[in-house]
Amino acid sequence: MPFTDFLPAVFRKAEPELTAPEPVALTDPLSAWLFGATPTHSNVSVTPKSAMQVPAVSSAVELIAEAVGTLPVKLFVRNAKGKEVDPAHPAFRLAHDEANDWTSAAELRTQLTHDALLHDRGGFALANRVNGRVVEFIRLDPLTVEPKSDDATGEPFYVVRQGRRSARYEYRDILHIQAFGVSAPINRARNAIALAIDLERHAAKLFANGARPSGILSTDAKTPPALKNIADMWNATFGDPNNTGKPAILPEGTAYQQTGLNSVDAQFEQMRRFQTEEIARAFRVPPTMLFDLTRGTWSNTEEMGHQFLTYTLRPWLDAWEWAYARVLLTSEERADRFFEFITDDLLTVSFATRATSYGQYRSMGVLTANEVRAGLNLPPLPGGDELGSPHINPDPTPAPQADNDNPPDTEKDAA
Image (cartoon, rainbow, N blue to C red; front, side):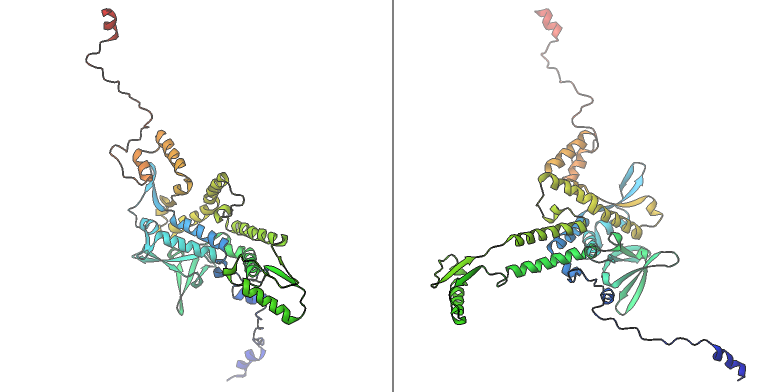
């Protein structure tokens, strides 16, 4: 080999030796980030499972998820008259009726919204296609899906872990629902939820046996055997629930003083109620809908129900409408077709209000009698498709005249 062949190796810059990374201790904040467990101020671990054990969190998550699931969604097509339902399109069944053979469309929306409220990545469902058409949705575990995007175009795609291998799916093959801000509410409010868990634990200890004595026995006895005998006598007599209410006979030189909750304990109860309000803010749910009726009245509870639809549910409904359109409709179909949730049931707060609304729409000529009956789940009636108002008769028919009636002039001449 010529000598010149060795020159590049001689003058080549030495590459730095690879060193093993420094180990990360379990107490290091980096380890918490690696394992997806960000610490809280109260050092209480907040996970989807532990958060759902807080009644306020569980109520908020179930309230939003079930409301999104139970509201019907339909596919509409634009035409010269405005819009009309398009039940003949294959996408109508997947959004309105059933997601697959064993899961209804409502149940899938509830599951995916539930996942999006508890996981930063959101909720996912795989769209199975046959000849390019979606035939069913299959829910995916959020922990097995990793959303990504193309570095050049920004187009999203998904990597799904399936056993020991991973598969890539394009954005039109995954039904994806995610909370606003790419962060689940339980993670944005993890410190408030952690404090609620800590207060729950303190309450359990406060009222547990031995955590707080129900009373104090004062005695002149000084020796440990004498004190133990008095305590054993008291527990034997009043430790049995069957002895509740019986008079207490105390040894000579012994007095009993009952203890109760002090002002600090009362503030503790207020703190627990305040944490419910904090969690309601995190989920943007009115406190009255979490059964906190401290400031609830008939009027503001009804108004909060409308706010729940406008400020809490509407962003989720919009996200679902676009997710359905992105997966089930082509770009050409989206030009004249769209999905829309029917929210009339949430706007109806009482039967009297509903009857008044139907009556006004009917008198204005907006709804026919059969449309009103359809809203009440009643069968149509013959002639009920007329749009005229039932309160106004544009062509009144005069009452028939009896055969023996004479005109007024005839009776006047006869007189």
